[in-house]
Length: 299
Image 1 (cartoon, rainbow, N blue to C red):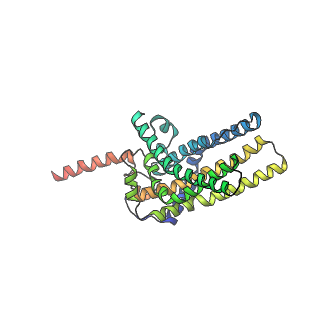
Image 2 (tube, helix red, strand yellow):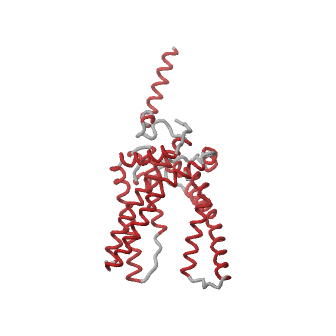
Image 3 (cartoon, rainbow, N blue to C red):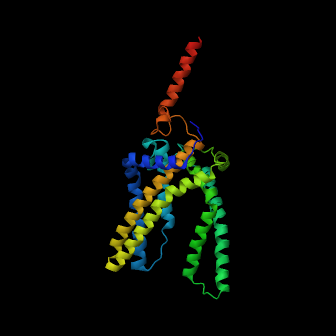
């Protein structure tokens, strides 16, 4: 099942088709994270308005969206019975109990990737601050935050060709392939950098722009109508969260399709596809029966 025929259009069409034909599973996997998304954003606003406490919810939201992404990878590559949050909490989808060693290795990978992105972001941010100070501009806390956001975007764009290739590692993580490492991913995606970049961009950009424009308009409308911040947060964040999870489902499915083609899956995986072969739980039995038959014929 390892056929290197990855095309942008086919991957995007497959991701949309998969979402359209698995909406019941999408609601099953997205409803809980969406509820958490709204609760987290509402808590952030209540603390700000009632207690004047600034709470950055981005890290909690990243955890929520990452959980959904991993579950949707498994929905696409393994099927609904292997895509539950109970499995994620119980054994991290790898079928094995928690261990300090594997947890430490995971943290090291996250730390290495974070540092690889953080260092150039800091260098760029500090360079911009020095430049603005040299121009006589007062460097306020608000300006520093703006520079940090802009620097992060620039670094992400610069490193995006590398990141889109290594992003297939997430699919391997979702499948519990502990033997798969970054070097394996790098070798298997050689020659597909531009294709993977366009797959990610076409899957992400349309809905991201639509979500941004829509939430911006809703914010302006609520300000003009003087709607209470709680009602505004529930409406805007509920809509923004729902669109975010739809976008994630499309991006993840496109990425999973790239993983299926470039890295390869086992017999019975990607059960929604006609070329998936027998279900994985039957694959071992079928293989054993074939061996038994072959042995009888040889006799």
